[in-house]
Amino acid sequence: MEFVDSHSHLFSEEFDSDREASINRALDLSVKTILLPNIDVDTIIRLKDFSSLAPENCLPMMGLHPCSVSADYKEHLSIIEAELYSDYKYYGVGEIGLDFYWDKTFAEEQKNAFLQQCTWAAELDLGVSVHTRSATYEAISALKSMKQKPRGVFHCFSGSIEEAIEIIKLGFKLGIGGVLTYKNSNLPEVLKQLSLDDIVLETDSPYLPPVPHRGKRNESSYIPLIAEKLSDVFCVSVETIANKTTANAREVFRF
Ligand SMILES: [Zn+2]
Image (tube, rainbow, N blue to C red; front, side, top):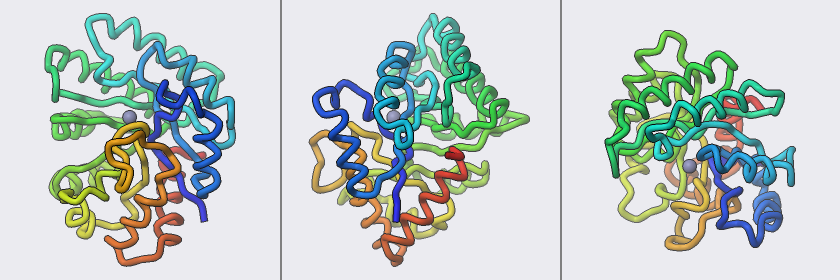
């Protein structure tokens, strides 16, 4: 049995004091693959350094996060493009998307950056890791507008059944993390109406830890806690959850 954490920022500063240990804790609990989405042009060296600690297990992605899109985004995108088209092996394009929650100043720029990076993903035959906040329908319609869409995951999904159905119709999967374990979450009700074929596991470390770690730092070794909750929701064994979600993640990110 093995798990995949399809979205983890284990390379971030929060883990500087225990980088190797955080990987080993995940490996000890059968979390064998950790996909690492980049944030911005300043995190690239950190991302590569971290991945080199365990290149078989820690798989980097490359992208510009929507919250890092500002007036000079085109310069930043050209650095992302150079990375993606270099010889360095990236396993996906991420994290990319639209975030209108705090600030819509650069909404147009965010949309341009998102579509550009999706185009590269389609061209390079890479999966995308999509972040949306207060912009899920905008991201769905941006993808619908593309002639050649990439495959991918809507990471940290916590939306409605209607949104889930639209995402699945695009051929995308839902990234499910710690939010599933929260008492007030409507995710169990939504997921019950869907198929396990459309779900991948993720932590989004260091954010959004599952119960009983709420309020603390999240890490990839908490994946089994999310899998356990998902096994309750679907009334199947944890092993079935592990097998299915691992196969789904492989289908998207081809590792
Ligand atoms: Zn993230």
